[in-house]
Image (tube, rainbow, N blue to C red):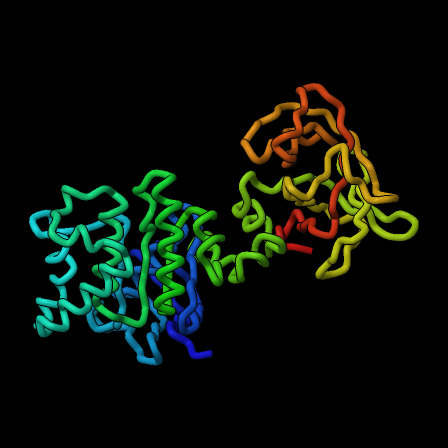
Amino acid sequence: MNTSVSIKDLSLNFGAVTVLKDLNLDIQDGEFLVLLGSSGCGKSTLLNCIAGLLDISEGQIFIKGKNVTWEEPKDRGIGMVFQSYALYPQMTVEKNLSFGLRVAKMPKAEIDKRIARAAEILQIEPLLKRKPSALSGGQRQRVAIGRALVRDVDVFLFDEPLSNLDAKLRSELRVEIKRLHQALKNTMIYVTHDQIEALTLADRIAIMKNGIIQQLDDPTTIYNSPRNLFVAGFIGSPSMNFLQGELAAVQGGTVFVANGVKFSLEGYRAAQPLRPGTQVVLGLRPEHVRVDEGFPAGAEVHEAIVDIEEPMGADNLLWLKHAGHIMSVRVNGSRRFKPGTAVKLVFDMSVASIFDKETELRL
């Protein structure tokens, strides 16, 4: 597969502050890559470097094999969609879409053709004669996407395009962006702090913290096999349960011990040897714990007390007290549990995560 965008040894400093450091990233032709992280992690800064809106301190940026490190944004073959719609209020939708093309002195027939295509793809044909003030937030964002679309470029950059919308609109437009990518098959680089957007849209996710990519993988791998404690805690809603304890040797293998309670690690696929005496953190997602039903024969059964129940429609979330920890467990929405009820649990260790407490890396 051909590389669409290649970032080599990129660093960016603002004065004495290093924002991005020695960053390397290859994005394939037609790939949908999501840069995910909390505020201040460097994801939008990286996107702005690719767009040419920020001058980098060191390194190189290639788009379609061409070194664009010092090229102007307009010469990089990119279309950018911002968080704020940035539409011209005095112009109609049609004029907003055509503005950049008219400035570039493109023939009118070609402009009309591109606008018609973008309007059809984004289903905004009835809005072409309206001004932005007569549009909803979702419609304005479609127009902003359309403005990038008419440029007919190789790479689209999205900087948190849905964060100004309400939850329902966000989820509708998320589907539209996915459909858009499937139809166009262009390379798309998308910045968000919303893990649901990342998991649903991405071919691969780059999770960032302090200007460094913590893990770059497909959504399934990141969800099921987080590389470190930060990634494990960042991905998943509700968050992964973390139990503090240590590894101990028993006849026939190694167990995890938390506050005197032993947990069998049968089924856990370790990436490196589990050494008894190591202080570790055991991570289990809420859906990987069975409560009071469907226990496999011979399974290790634990006891817990229901602290709080949160009905969530299709699911109920139970907060349980167990082994000195409070942990969340997801059960079917038809099952109800009163606070104070004693329940039996079985943990699915085949999908658990174990992290070294000191290095925070997956074992």
